[in-house]
Image (tube, rainbow, N blue to C red; front, top):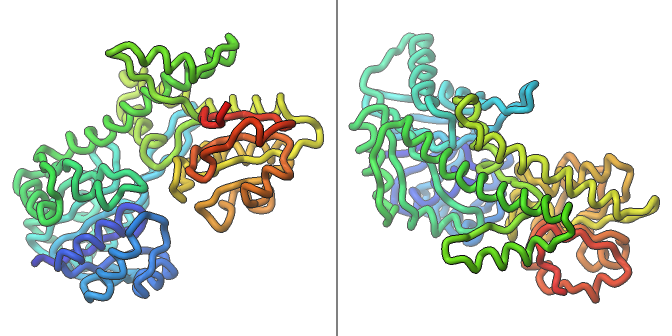
Length: 407
């Protein structure tokens, strides 16, 4: 079987590397963090995901998965590194492809004719073409130009908390710079993917993944905008949406404190950056969702007295995960600390506060928070918070951004 080198051992790269290894392929996982490499080589994991620890341990014990800080020769290279954005002066976001470029250039000493290079990282349209340009430039610099390299974009479509199930059961898109590259990528993923695998060109595959997340962002923005309107008009948004959804062709989503994670909160900006004049709705949706944390902060400050103690229930970007990337809950807690309020953070899925809150908030248990806080802000609908009632919060101010506290 072809050997694999997977660059980036985070929420996407580690499950992907592990599942290939358990299917009998020799996999080298590469990460810039020495502690991550050490953790994985000991058969443990550094992120929280159901059953991932079992899969990684099996992959390492089989001898098929090893981790290192530097790449090595392989038949197939998979790039699964971060693609964040940089804020621009006009309030938009500009894609940061530095991690993709660095990973691409790092494999230049090890590639050979016939190798397949797959970009899994969610990326702006045209990034796969840039990967080819960067790699060829680096090969020329090293004095070893190589013909016959294949390039493809194969974006993941997995949800934190269900990654291992969805890696196998979700449809997949393989977009090649050439048909041969798409076909070779399809044959690779067919070794574990039981769903359909669709072939297309790389640019279409790139935009397809961005479109999926932009679609979700626009729908969330509609719900969040409704919540703003309801706050202004003194209407219960949860009751409004419940009644509106009784229409057979209406399915409004639930509002929240904003949108987080490395997909929905980021990917639409890649479309806006590529076509700013055309992506008007997509940009507006991003602006609505980005503004929601500020609205929540204003609600809390209006409810809080001078000596208020505010308990933020949840820091993750979604329920029942430990992922804090682009989390509106973290942003809200930081703004409340900026306002001089005493902030208690309750996040059952982490053992330490993120850097932005260290020294500015206190990580406590739910019991401690309920005993000490004068204002409760429910930001994430974790299972740990299910069953909270107004009776339990008697005498406290409540801002429930998820509509889950029992009446």
